[in-house]
Each structure stands twice: as C-alpha cells, then as structure tokens.
Image 1 (cartoon, rainbow, N blue to C red):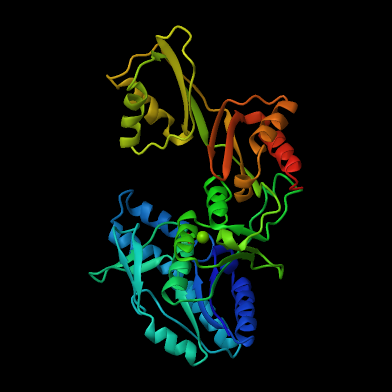
Image 2: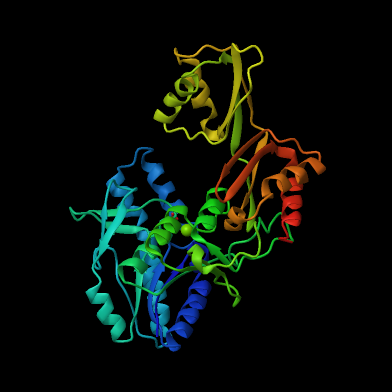
Amino acid sequence: MVKKVLKFGGTSVGTIERIQHVANIIKKEHQSGNKLIVVVSAMAGKTNELIKLANDISEEFDSRELDVLLTSGEQVTCALLSGALIKLNVKAKSWLNWQIPILTDGDHTNSRIINMHVETINKYLDEKGIAIIPGFQGISKNGDVTSIGRGGSDATAVATAKLFSADFCEIYTDVDGVFSTDPNKIPVAKKIEKISYDEMLELSSLGAKVMQPSAVQTAMMYDIPLEVRSTFTDRKGTKIFSQENIDYSKSVTGVAYSRDDSKITIIGVADKPGIAANIFEPLSKAQINVDMVIQNISSDHKTTDITFTVKRDDVSKTKQILKTNSKINYKQIVQNEKVAKVSIVGAGMVSTPGVTYKMFRALSDELINILAISTSEIKLSVLIDEENTLKAVKKLHTIFDLD
Ligand code: ASP
Ligand code: MG
C-alpha cells in the first residue's frame, strides 16, 4: 500500500463527463489499495471567467475579495468530484482550505503554503476514505482566504505530498507527459520516460509548459517523486526524480525553443572596466531578466558593442532604462525581435565531450547563423533568426538521437 497525491488540472475536470471519468480513475487506484489525497484545479476556463467578472467591477478589484472570488472555482470541483465518487459507492469527502486548514504566508493572490493540518485527513485515509482537497487556495494567519498564484494547483499538490509524507505525487493533465521537443510542431518528438528535476526545470523554463516550475523546484528540494501523465489515456507518463536514479544513455534529453526573447545591441560603448556593470545594474534593479550576453572584441581598444537578450515584454522598459542611464555613453541602440532561442538540455551532457561542437556543426550544416550563446551545466542555448526555429529544432533532435 502506498500513499499518493493525485492532482487533476483544469482540462481534466473541465466537464461533468470528465469529472465522472476522473472519479473512475480514482476508484481504480483506491481499489488497488492505495491511500489517496486528490488535489483539484478549477474547471477549465473557470478562473479566467471569475477574473473577468472582477474586472467588470473594477480593474483594481480588491485583492482580498479577489481571493475569495477566485478560490470558489476549486470549491466547485471538490464538491462535484467528491459527489461523483460517492455516486460510485466510494468513500470520499471534500475539505476546503479553511477546514483543513492550509496555512499560507504572503500577499493576497500571491501567497505560499507553509503548513497543513494533517491529522484529520490522515485518520480519514486510515479509515479507507479518499480526501478531495482544493488546489490554489489557502488561509492566512488572520483567517483570510488566500490564493497562491495562477497555475498554483501544482504547488498545492507538491506541498501536500511533502506535508503528508506521500510516496508519490501524480500530476494528471491533458498531455501524455514531457516530450523530447514540442510534439505539436515536431511529430517525431518522443515522450520521455524518466527525467531529472534539473532537466525538467530547464525544459519548463524554456517553454515546455507541462508543470509549474516552482512546483518542480519544491519537489526537487524535498525529493518527492513526480509523474506527469494524461487523464485521457492509460499510457505511462513521464517520471521526474533525482538524477542518481537515472542512467544516461544519451547526452541530450530534450530540445526546447522559445520565441519570447528579443536581442538588444548597444553600439559604441566605452571599452573599460565598470561599463557592463553600469549597463546591467539598473536593469536588474528593475527586475528585468537578462539572459544571454555577448561583448564584441574592440578593434580600436576604445569602444565596443554589447549584445544581450531580454523577454520581449521587457523591451520597451529596457530601452527606456538604457536611454535615461547617465552612466553610459553609446552611439546607438538597435533591437531585433525576430529571434528565437533554441536549447538542448541533458544531464548526460556533463559526461559527454563534444556536445557543443556537434550542436554548432549541425546548425552550420543547415546554414543557420548563431547570434548569441549561453550555457549552463546541463543546457546549451543559441539565439538564431526566428524563421529558422523549426529547422534548427528538427536537426538537433535528429543528430542527438531523439527521433
Ligand atoms: N485554477 C487556478 C488557475 O487557473 C489554479 C490552477 O489551475 O492551477 O490558475
Ligand atoms: Mg492549471
């Protein structure tokens, strides 16, 4: 017998039929003798609908009241799912944030879970009941209803697994798992059977939006084994755990790409100590995340060009800050928004020599020019012209044996 947390996302509980289907999945798990805590999201689209209602009253709708409003979505799903299980003659019961309680810290709409009371629910599990609890919501020290940020049900599931000492946390969603690249665009993409937390974090921060990255981070911190799988098929999903449990036959696990970066070049800045710091300090103070940086060699030893990337949404703010920065002089600022970042990710890269060279050679064979490069221990990213994105991803997917 194992103790499991099962989390069902919005699309998995998006209609009454789907809720009934989910109840059947849970019933089967329960019949195989497992202790189950089920975490649910609001029905697909519900949270957006509620936000719209609030905005119809005011664009600055009171955040305490917004939390009361938004958390109602998860309340609905808890009751419907619990009712569906009871209809199937399964012992089940729902609890809301304040009944458990799920204690949170921090501001309204952006709180974080710090503790949960476990005794009552544990006793119920011992009595062979299934506990249905809401994702995304909590209660503050003052007794106010709180929420933990959009997509927060993943974080609730992982926190629940940790606080209840569950053996596994399974994330049921509308895709089969984590893929070696975007299966919608590259049909040869394969489902990854096992992946480490670090790789998953790199892939999700690079655009593979299967699970909330902060929830993966928490799972990594407490070593909680995760599985992402589909609600709509019986196929095995992707297991996510710590690196020691994975044996790497391949140097690269996945190829990711994103099209939300922009390249900014400052032409003709002085080539002397302190300039880079003067450029980037105000950007970091403004919470602008600078990703790739390259500085050209200065041919005249007096001036140089510095190129870097930021998220497209941050471009105008970045330019504004550069223009009002009195500590730097330059000739010109140019920007290019038609760029894409393509990355290879793999914990196996650490022990395989030549991965970098192989990537660059493959891109040059396709006549793709590299505009910037950045690396971490398990990731290698290049910036290229946006029009070459899929060509590059396909090529890399093939040469690193992922097709
Ligand atoms: N219902 C919330 C949202 O849509 C939480 C979640 O689904 O994870 O953001
Ligand atoms: Mg969600």
